[in-house]
Length: 349
Image (tube, rainbow, N blue to C red):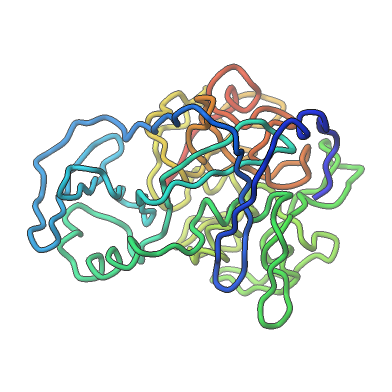
């Protein structure tokens, strides 16, 4: 990923250590700061308007129903939350070993998270804890330490190291946003989907696509999300912007007709229901010249960072690719920055 400028003096002040997570035979490096950090702020689990808990005697777990959005929270025998499943969504939030995400070239902020975000084979609905498909999947998911949605997203920042499949094709590593363009107002062309990054043709249920050589190893904002959730995590993908059994191509279509659970309405004004968000949620922004309900940008919510801010990652032109950093606007939803004011809605798939 090419980038414009950053403070070398700031980077030099940070003493960093790298640790490696094994992912399917490959490796990925996170950056963790060695000096002491404040105790991390915990994400709100949303309004605690709970219905009666459902006992699961065989497993020793309890399942509690919550609202806004409608969801099920799983408690262990000590009353500790270990997972959250949201109605109408395949996304499952598991509580596990704490990890640190950082991108020191573009921000001093770090994010310490116990959330592991995975996709269940089916959308959740109340009472599914009694069904065999969930019982079997959940038992395996609790032990799974392969790369989840958050780790996959970080693989495409400037820190990402190339990974190749058996055919020698690169499927992971530092991604650009797109090629330079004289006609694009931001200086770089859009239309970089996951198949452009891979350099392969792709057959969608509703369309056939061929890669553009000039967009090789590039991902625009929606292409980045489709790479993480679709190609890497296995969520179905569509080639058009129509509603259907998968993620549409563009951010505006994912926001309006995409699958999953909409977490707050798009009123055309700044969305403020940040307590409804959990890591891995898709975020949608009005990034055009006219403020309103139009959606021109999207990203993935990471959680609350060590400075108390709601941080996200997205692919954008100023950093020439995916970043959780603050080049070209702070990657946070609170405060009065560019992206905070342009945040419109969110969806959990």
